[in-house]
Image 1 (tube, rainbow, N blue to C red):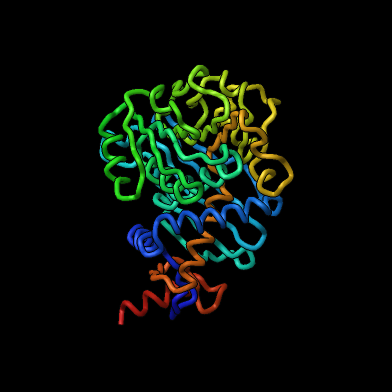
Image 2 (cartoon, rainbow, N blue to C red):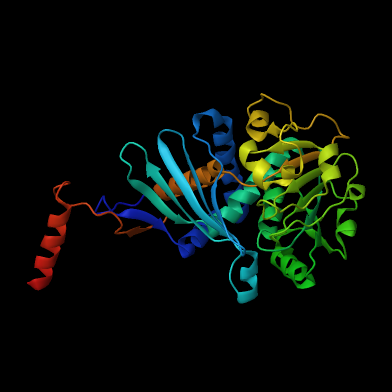
Length: 352
C-alpha cells in the first residue's frame, strides 16, 4: 500500500478508485482472482464467526449489516435493497464496507461496495457453478437483465467458458442494454420473448430479478434434467423466484442455512429439508454434482464471508501498489486518554 504520513488516516476506496482498479486489472481477471479469494475463505469456513445478516425491513425495502471475522480481521458491509429506487433513477442496491484489525480494532480499509458487491456476487455464482454445473456447459439463460446481469455473464465466461447467452427481461430495453454492454466480450447473444424460450437448450439458468415480492420466474415444467440453476435474485423474506416443485426435484446448495432459510428459495420448504453447504463441497466434505441427469440449485443470497473476501482482495491489490486515498476518520490525541484536550488544543490553534 502506498506510504502514508499519518498512520491514523484510513485507506479509502472511492467509486472512481474501484472503477480504476477493475479497469486496470481487467474485469474477467478481477472476477477470477476475486473468486480465488472467496474459495480460499470458503475452504476455511470453520474459522469464521457467522451470523445471519442483521436486517431492518420496511414497506419499500431493506437495510442490512453483514458482519464476520476470522479472528485476525473483522469485516462488515452496509447494504440496502430498494427495488422502487429505479423509478427515481437510483440504484436498487448500494453498499459500503469496512475491514478492520481485530488486534487493535482500527479500520484498515473503508471501501465502496456497490460495484464490489456486484462483482463478488457474480464471482460466487460462477465459483459455485464450477462444482455444480454440468460438464462442458456453454449456454446460460439469464432471466432478469438488470444491474447484476453483465457481471454474472462475465464471471461465468471467465470461470466456466460460457459464451452463449439467452436473455429475457420483462422490460425489453433491459435486454437490449445488456446485449450492447456485452457485445464486445465475445458472446453469442439471443434476446428471447419469454422465460420459457430463454431456458430452451440452456445448461445453466440464472435468475436475477429484483422485485420485493414472490414471483414465479421458473415453473417445474420449464426445468429438464441435467441443468444447473443459479438463483441470485433480490432475496428477502417473502421474495422467491422458483416454483416450489422445482426445489423438491433439485439437489440444493446454500451458503449459510440459517440465513438462506429466511431469505432464500428454501423459505418455501420445511425447516428440516436437506441442503448442502457450499463450503462443504469446496473442502471435499460433501459432493457437488454427481450425475449428468442431476438438477442442481445454488440458492444464493450472499453471505458476509464473501464480502470479507472481497475487501481482503481489494486491500491486497492496494498493498501491491494501487492508487489510494485516505480519510481523516480516527480521532487519536497525543495522549490516548485526553480526547477532550484534543478539542481544546484544536480550538486554541483556530484562535491564533
